[in-house]
Length: 204
Image (tube, rainbow, N blue to C red; front, side):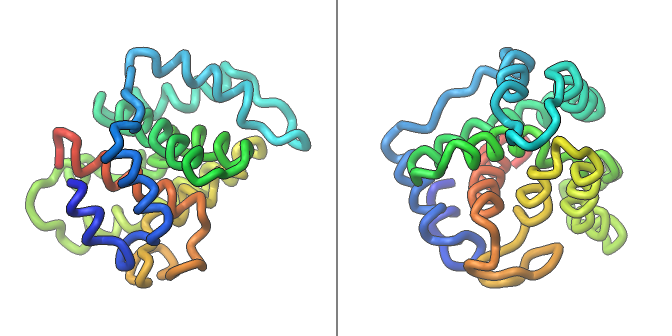
């Protein structure tokens, strides 16, 4: 899967973020995952993710949002979200990003697939080529998830990663067809981690 990421540098992913992730992978510095501690990690997120100017969101509220997401999907979804969060923070550390960005990536990793709650299971689980109607659901899920986050004042800062992580470096992604440096760094980072974990999961 490292080779797939390498081939996608400059087309799907930006060079800086992709090469940073690959250096972690080759060096054996990609963190291990303990999905059983998922709920405990979410409690930690609630303590660190919120901006000073935002009203505090209780850990119970945040835990409830994520728990609903996990309960609505199979165990793969919860595990995937946890892994994306951990990987994204590892890349952020390597890139020297600030603490606010790390906290945003951490919480955003858990909630990046929120929009998939509106995607029919037949489309998510389908192994063959999607028909146009099914692909329309897939293309809509980043914007759908961002709109949900936007409606929650204390989670509005997570909308950028959720909305733009399926943009591609060369401009053929969705929902807006952004390219290159126009893709926000939070979305670039999340995209590499999201794609790598999806490719190496049991559903790849």
